[in-house]
Length: 435
Image 1 (cartoon, rainbow, N blue to C red):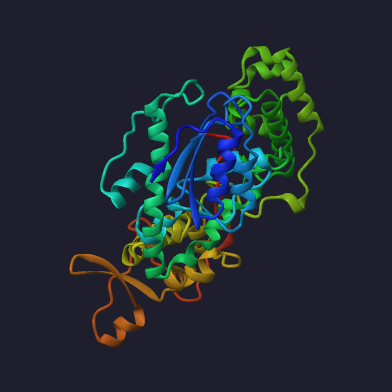
Image 2 (cartoon, rainbow, N blue to C red; image 1 turned 45 degrees about the vertical axis):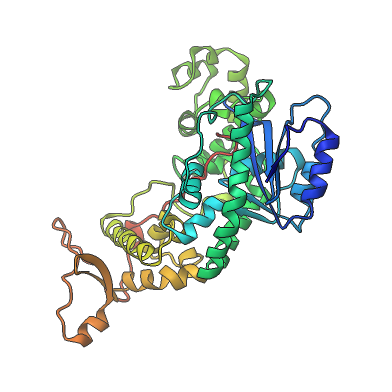
């Protein structure tokens, strides 16, 4: 593979992108800094196909990244391959207003062909290519110039190794027939809504203190105010106010600005400074959240109740067994909040009961909560079996799982968990803009 010198001019970048535009796939990675900013600062772009690779310096004087962005977001004929590419896609979106498409993420793909949960790049390389990568430049300051040869070599390795791994991984996916399992996950990665900075919706990523419309209205207003402050100042939102403090202020709003000095997580200066005045104005302008905007589920962390929690535990045990049997990461197969929703009797719209997830796991999960499946230890391994099969074989059915404290056993077919005992949780997505 040909490795080009560091690209620092628009002419060299344009020539490279013209050649890569005819490739079947390209591998892409970025290096950036965002510890002290709201918006990530792009410091380096690495790109390769199966024949050539290069690192591009976006900080070089006079360089125009238009040819690169054209290749990444407008060329639908070239597959863009990333590893754990969420932040890379975010940067591309910030620069162009679009996301790369079509897209493939090797970290996500590994979950479909192994039990690996969020495998790191170095482990990916070692498992597929059999050697360890140099991690020496991993935490370097990529904004400093000039870049060293070691930095550039390390950075380009991220895409050259990936260009060798991807074709092998694709063959494995085709052989196992699991490629279509990833379609929705890849589309989700490329969805522009994941990267759009809208102050009016960021409150949904914060753990809600209650479902009270007035509290949620203040939560929305304060979160929008904080987001706007962070964007305008280009500083991390947590530097202005942490999520826990924000939720506390929404639940227990101060009557006067001087009361802000009593709020845990805020400095005494808030009682009479400009940012404190702007916060108080945001609180004053807040309106109760309309019924149409109320969360569909209870706040994250709400208890399922004893019986519901035990049913959820059984479903999680079933998930471990099933993921081991079909060699798939349990995280890809089912999320905790979906399991708990099923334990609570919530079936409508549950991803576990749709598509390939239903075929691979959801059907068994449904039979478990309906009392049609049992667990047994067979030759030292925990397995599941249908109650009817056990009865028809003449063997004794396994003893039901019993909690010593209240004597609970899995529900019989048709049993429903009382609504008052159960509340499913909503998983809080990672904050956009956080490293």
